[in-house]
Image 1: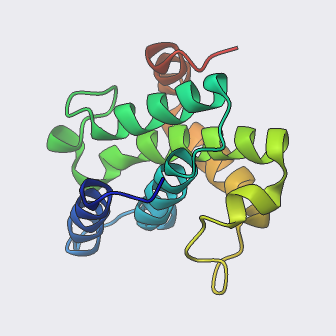
Image 2: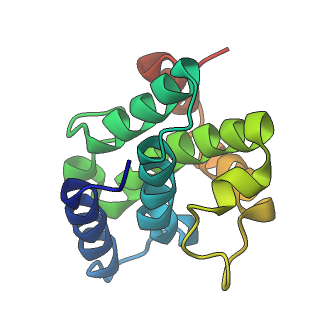
Length: 145
């Protein structure tokens, strides 16, 4: 299955929202469009097992939800931290299950920012910034242990 126009439109929306912001934003928030594209690409690829599809859909649904644990309309682009956390966590789980090469196929920043190491750093940084809210995010998405 090919990536749909709706996926591209949302990618462009994320890019515009994040890159047009001129205030203080953590570096990892700028990775949200490529994280979205990697998840939507993996989902659209048709190779995911049902449990993997549910994880990807949970992350994408959380990303699209306007009123999540750290809403963007309240916190501005800093409100994307929880979305980066969820997307990175799911991609890390897919990489562990299928191999890093599987996820790298969908990572648009492979040349400038290799996926290897990024996911771990992003999860650690966002989890730290979210504090106790990280567990709320995991519970909300159904991705907790």
